[in-house]
Image (cartoon, rainbow, N blue to C red; front, side, top):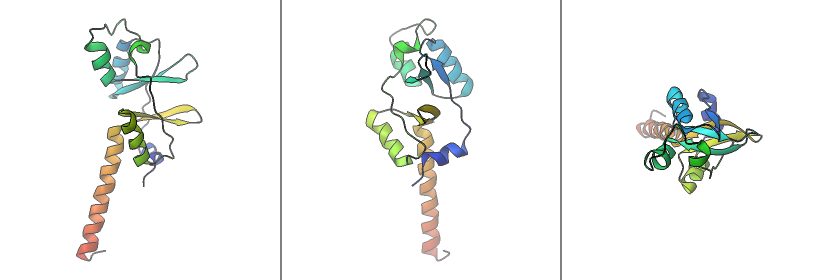
Length: 145
């Protein structure tokens, strides 16, 4: 079973963080510039207070007709945030995300956020592990093992 630490070691860490006082427009710009689907939102003490995602943008800003240039992240971010640690397994991380219905998981170390993984990141690892298993089984069955 793969730990999140393995994923973190293999990828560049793009961590987009904004204060809860920033505007939605700032978050959209940051997400677009970095090609990510979420930004972490922190308070004045850099404590994680929420996550703002593309999903939040659609459901809490665009659909209700709010102006991204005047709406603060604090008004529209997701505040029910679940986190994980690098030692968690991919299976455990996926289960945490399923339990609350989110697609982004902040990874914390000593109380500070060090990374943000998406459900896609985790499913890519799961898919690769399954491909490896199938390949090994085929080798075993064909006698090449």
